[in-house]
Length: 95
Image (cartoon, rainbow, N blue to C red; front, side, top):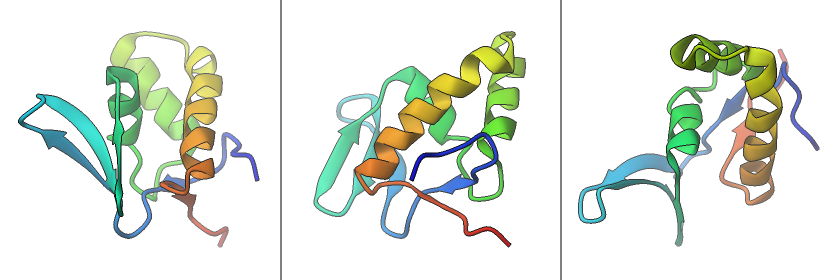
């Protein structure tokens, strides 16, 4: 399953975005796994809360970085699709 602009992503139970003070970097902690994150991934994942759609996340990032959300949205989808495949991201079921 591929994500769409209307998909609402969330971190599954047991997966957390954390700041590693030893390395002074953000990481995504999952059971028995850790993912190093760049600044772009942190910006996106900090907005993933299970209530915002990918479109809404791209719009918020567009405002924050003064960039057209239409340019950001495909990159957000690709990044989140990768996390979905690694099973450290899920989507909220449609109502």
